[in-house]
Amino acid sequence: MDRLNEKETEKNVKKVKWSTFLKDVFLCSLGSYGGPEAHYGVFSSILIEKRKYLTEEELTELIGLYAIVPGPSSTQTITAIGYYVVGPVLALLSFLVWAMPAIVTMSLIGVFFSVVASNSFWQPLITYLPAVAVAFIIYAAFSISKKVLKKWPDWILYLATLGLGLLLVPISMWAVPGLLLLGGFIYFLPRVKEKNETKVTYKPKWLILATVIGLVIINELLRKWISAPWSTLYTSFYRYGYSVIGGGQIVIPMMIQDLVQSQSLISLNDFLSGYAIDQAVPGPLFSFAAFVASRSYSGSWFSFFAGMIGGLSIFLPGILLVFFMFPLWKSMRGINQIKHFLNGISVAAAGLIAMTAITQAIKLPVDWTVYAVVGVSVLLLLSKKIPAPLIVILAMALGFLV
Image (tube, rainbow, N blue to C red; front, side):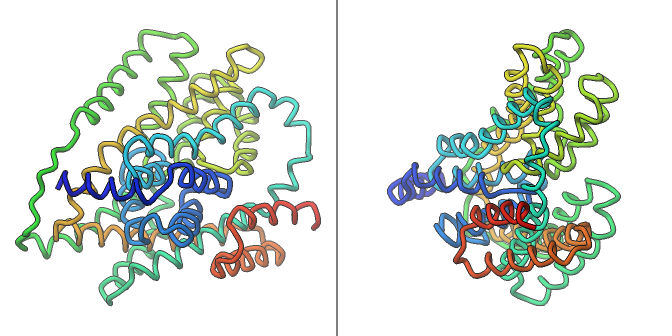
């Protein structure tokens, strides 16, 4: 199996130019607004339908896999795609190209927030971005559902997950990984006794997992023993990185409780204002950590570096877990039972993305122009004639005209 993976890697290296792939990742970064579900629509449009780096089925499996792993799920997914296309080095570069523009931008906004906060020029730019984000979610739900719903049991699990998601996800963030695992086991358990001809020789990279756990222990010790600014930033945001399952939206209440209420590093007004600005910055929502860290030390020479430390710290545990989980997924997805388990996760993930499309569409302002932007954006995405970043730019321009 290891040799087979090496051959596949060599084949991918010959087919894919690193510069071309990283340019596509950068385009994904520029066109990704909203949460992970909206990001998946951009990934599907650029990396699958346009470039065909992997299949829709493989993307859905990766979405389901990293939805149950702590960390920023869309960032982990695009990093894993880089791993799949070539290997671990391209995976790391993919993460940097995807995340660094947003981290640097939010760090700089944190530094100059007093100027930005008093300037209303940027506000029209974000008027219709939530509508475009919903369009990407709808597009992702449609395209992924079309691929994974093949038989009537798929439809039953899909609709059940969608319904349970509408009921349970608002109650607890643990509903998402719980429903994904439930979907996997529903498909897995009836086939436990099936025989497999595929033999797995892959040995998990326990050193990487041990590193993550070791850093968690060191992190907690640093919180108790050292009170220096860099230590406070690193330990706080690294903790968020290994505590959160479900993406950037889930980390917000944790930050408010810790940084605003407990540590008083930033005011609630600044926190919420920065979060609004973050919605207008493309890329992963975890980059909001860079703003919070930078703003917490505004007026100091340390401010920008604080943003970079906070931004990179929150991503670190999740990215390390990519390097542990991806080879395991690559090796074991050929086993019959694992195939069924991943298929169950994929169907459940499609149901949850559809659930997100419904809930986010309901939250949009009651405005025919907003609904029109959603509808037109979905049609443009389905037509595959207009690049995703251009759709976002058009929506931003519309904010000034309407």
